[in-house]
Length: 347
Ligand code: SAH
Image 1 (cartoon, rainbow, N blue to C red):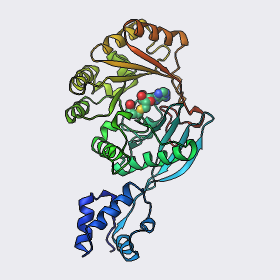
Image 2: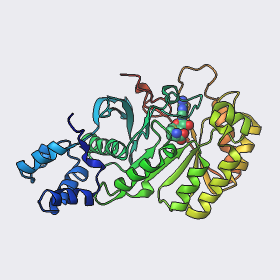
Image 3: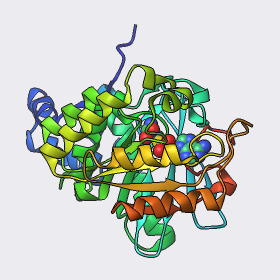
Image 4: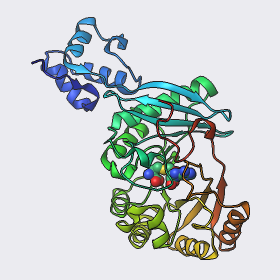
């Protein structure tokens, strides 16, 4: 049986240096190859032009580069671009480039499918197939950065982990990917321009706080009333609001970083005074702001975007209570690239 080749990008720089030394070559080659893999994003050993042919063949014989492949690129009439990203085992995830006047944002996936069961989200219907590894997350960002240069003549400026999956249920790999994204040996981006969005896994939020991470945290709240939240986000029965609240207070005490709550207002679900007042009370536990996001229909008649009057009621009450609130318009809806619409529909 032929031994399975190893994914070269699972190796640290030191391990690569060791490989070359073991082969009787200079350890320095390890640094050169590492640079090709990470700073120059090489997809093949042949692309490594300052490495001798012999050495490249040696690498070829021992390793593979499991690079992602953008299988399909769709453009929205508003400039948003959606990538269908093929992984080495054939599975597909999606990532989105969102251009704005002053920034370009990448929205990346952290899992294939999702293990959570939010009733209003198309990704939930796919179920979770597997976690992405750090390289597969990093590659999505690199692909979008290249597209940003190509189509908008500027590098990527922001990253949000709001694609497929629950980032805090793939904790180690997401953190490793962010390390690479922020490292000078990777993309050298500032962690302040990265937002990790979670449905709220209290234990993991505490762990992030303990690790002193420098990126920002967003929580998909959608309701600050236990029964309502459990009815639309059933995992709330396990990770309930009370634990979430305590973990967020802890997060702020450790990081001093304000939390963003993502919130959709639906008719008949969370559009009453009681719902608004519960959100106001929840926002007072730790410094926070609220993003009211537009509902992107996923053909389920139980969910309908609330009226403008109901949304305005939220805005006015929050503002009256000194809470910062923004109303977000959807982007990329015509190509199913908006929040909650990522479900590999076009493949
Ligand atoms: N699992 C993480 C990351 C995915 S998030 C999280 O829950 O935060 C993408 C964001 O889109 C979340 O805020 C989610 O609640 C929201 N969302 C999901 N389905 C949506 C829909 N149909 N319309 C609008 N927003 C939706």
